[in-house]
Amino acid sequence: MAGELPDSAKLVFGDRTELAREFADMLREHGVERGLIGPREIDRIWERHVLNSAVIAELLPRECRCVDVGSGAGLPGIPLAIARPDITLTLLEPMARRVAWLEEVVDRLQLDSVTVVRGRAEEGPVRERLKNSDVVTARAVAPLEKLARWCLPLVKPGGQLVALKGESAQEELERDAQAVRKAGGTAGRVAVCGADVLDQPTTVILIDRQTRQTRRDR
Ligand SMILES: C[S@@+](CC[C@H](N)C(=O)[O-])C[C@H]1O[C@@H](n2cnc3c(N)ncnc32)[C@H](O)[C@@H]1O
Image (cartoon, rainbow, N blue to C red; front, side, top):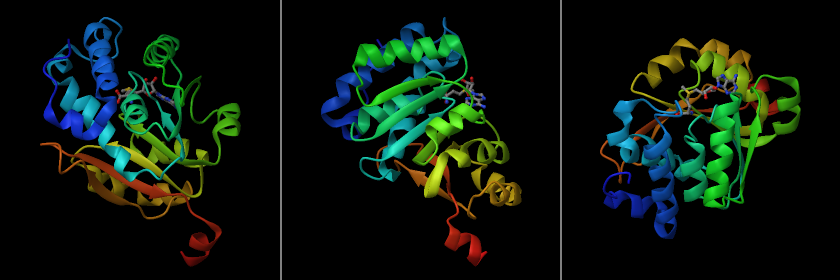
């Protein structure tokens, strides 16, 4: 069992809370042995992983097409898919054993809106298949400069990269501003999600993919 269900889980997942509990249980039972999370994470699966991931749902437009790059254990993708079944979600992951895990989770929770794809974001066939997505998410995958180069080509003009980051988000955004613009992103901004439900809200960097108009205005 993944510890006691926090009150905030019901606020975030509503009538799909049981699915979130099942995912948390799977992570707790198999996450360490399968190399998906560290042993110290077991006691903080809900707040630090499941809920922290799911609260980005408040940023995503209805019925959008979203790719979670480097999904690994399924974060933020699986909690997002549970919280927002209207979103068509692709979990992108290069490592075979993590892909197997993601497929097991999707199967077990019967998440019909989710597809698992094996590959790296920067690969040609992956770009071709996943281009023009409305939103790309990524958590703990790479520094912003690299993320922008890998992920922005998958985002449609005017769509958004949502990078889950820690407290140094603003610093990272300023440090990598030039690389982000070169990769086709706008200036970007830092936002906080889940402030009303979590003790430690989730910090994200939001970068829009440039459109013809925003490129002209630069
Ligand atoms: C540190 S893990 C984080 C996993 C998950 N997002 C999380 O927050 O727990 C980074 C993941 O990114 C994947 N990854 C690394 N480079 C990638 C790339 N170029 N494209 C897609 N995924 C990548 C790795 O295989 C790994 O599963």
